[in-house]
Image (cartoon, rainbow, N blue to C red; front, side, top):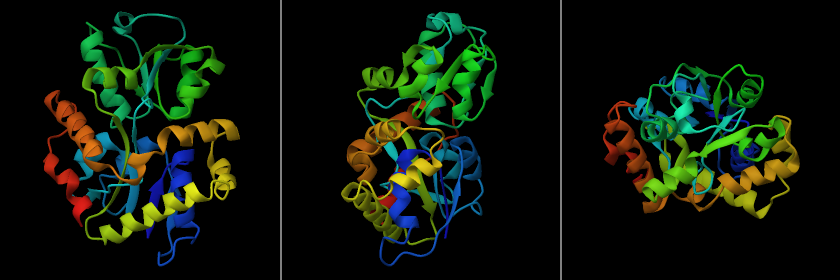
Length: 280
């Protein structure tokens, strides 16, 4: 079975037991590690993978062939993307500026565009897609005027002498009252979605009960990350929503995608379809 997810600590933590044959009754997995911009593009092709991690923002492009699973993803509070600049500034100064983003089909990008519609009066300049770990050096070196960062950048941007223009998570929670839907796990509609959901939940429970078991695997794939930063990353992105989206999680996803559709940032889709995988 083909499985694609990022090398980030929250993903390797969640899937460690599953892909290392520690969950009974599971098949062999052919694992590919890919940056979120790559997986968001692959989600448009049902031959890419059986199960994969994508941004919630990419669901409208994938929902024809894939179903959202109710577990394994990243959704929560206090875990939003950041907008960073080399010098202290204000949102109005982003008018006409070059912005580095990790993906134009990411939740981070949706949040950024929705925020900018409120806070930036003029049109921003070029949006430059680059791997998330290259964004902070690009801002530091003046290759771009600002960067939209995700993942462990929340803990490390000070090392690059950068300034936080805004925390999009804080803005979103204050503006909407809902948690932030970041990464989704999707599976082909033709598969046994219930079994896959049970396998992933079992893998998460194994990780929680055996926190040291996955450490070598996590650090092997983390990009020059200390064990302390990796743990902070996991603590932030793996939570109760990773085990079960529940009504609160689904409502947050519906709210985000509904607002993005109104702003014509994503294609339209039937939001009631989001809960399909929760009842199979």
